[in-house]
Length: 198
Image 1 (cartoon, rainbow, N blue to C red):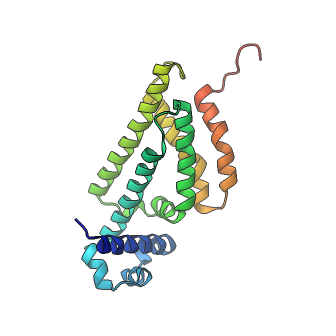
Image 2: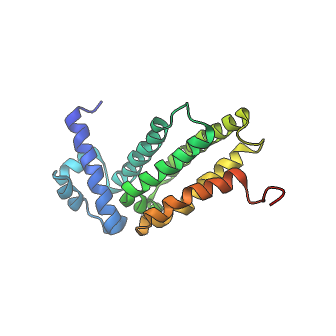
Image 3: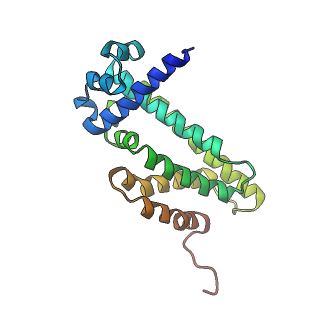
């Protein structure tokens, strides 16, 4: 287990890596620059990460773990299923806004992931999908939602988050994205068909 000082140093290196990789991309990023930004020696970086590729992938893992843990920690079990989905959308917006550099690297540099890392990413995606499916199933059981394929709804929800918030990564459309959350949730919850009599 890492001692506190070692853990702090590792976090500093990862944070510096996010900034350098997002600015220069994987190929142009230099370990020396990451070390300088983290205020450590180049050799220290290699004490924690065997290569630039490993650092790149561990940077992603740290960010994704933090993202998923944030979702789990910030969603109260007392909320309705609809409130939970709304909360997840807002937390996703906050994460993308606060960690735009990491999100940008995710979208532009994914070709440098090896097969093991792709498998890890798929497992993470499955965990997130299962969490959403469980929330939707709870809503069905409580009568909040009609009986429907909860996995299909979870996939639609994940796709909607990606479509709404991707522009944030490359622009400053924070308020526009936030304004889309409720209308998008309304479409997912209630569909497009107008109620009878309208």
